[in-house]
Image (cartoon, rainbow, N blue to C red; front, side):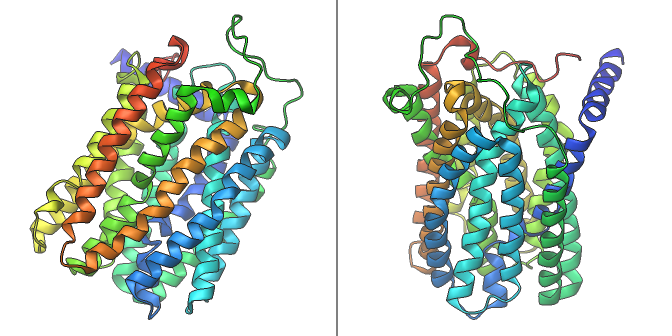
Length: 422
């Protein structure tokens, strides 16, 4: 009982200390929860474009948006993570505004490009933003708390989306997009009013006194661990789009389940993360971060293995499978995300932290951008090849991440306590 009370006091202390940041994260994320599970499905339902065309447009727009992640690293290092967080919300508002009028390939491409540019900038700035917030304290503590907050907001948004789609049809889809636009603009305003994540007034210093690195980009490129982290992020990138792209399309287009299945699956996963993220992060404190990311990648790949031989499911069986997949993906994320982001924030030299994170996250974005091309396999006589390739990619990601972290200093390798106060 004492432990439970101590944890509650610690969490409430965290919320009180950073209540404005928490509010900004809630506003920023709840709008994403309304639409994130529907990014590709939206256009299959509201346009006459084929799945293959939408997949190509999505991949092309995603690839074109990749440099935004690298640019975001420069912006973060020069102007602070807050500037990047504001900009990504404004890009999101612009992109989803175009969703409302997207019917032909050109506008669909533009909408997906802006939405993806926002995502690329977000993931570059978010890790640096949390690192600034932790201010020398255990990174996982703050990341786990904010990820749980984000999960609660995403889950709430997904529940609203499911209810809206159940009764609103295509009109409901458009109202969800409008709500996302409004929350994106509101989040930009809230982030602009905060102090956290602003421009540093002094040059960052390495954490170790014996760290003789200069912080040059050439040095970064020559480091084997940095290269392996980049490769690992490329391989694990499809995990970010597997639920709302491949699985959503499978459930809706091939298993003929209602469109609400996507936000329902998303709501289950985010509800688990909201309730358990801080506890899971606490339980794995002291473990090797490379092992944690590898376990998360393996669990993600496991969701694709049954689909290699599984025929289309119906009714209660189909819904049971959806829930099982959501649980596995949630567990994978809770184990791997804090560890991976801690490594990406702490492994590079502080002088180039923003640009290094930009490289890592851009590599992940390449994997995310290429994955929709494989959706065309669902329209062939060998759809099982998609799921086989997916499982193999995540197996490779697990191996590479484990090897990458093995070459890092102990202070970066070992997961820190999620809540030192508890």
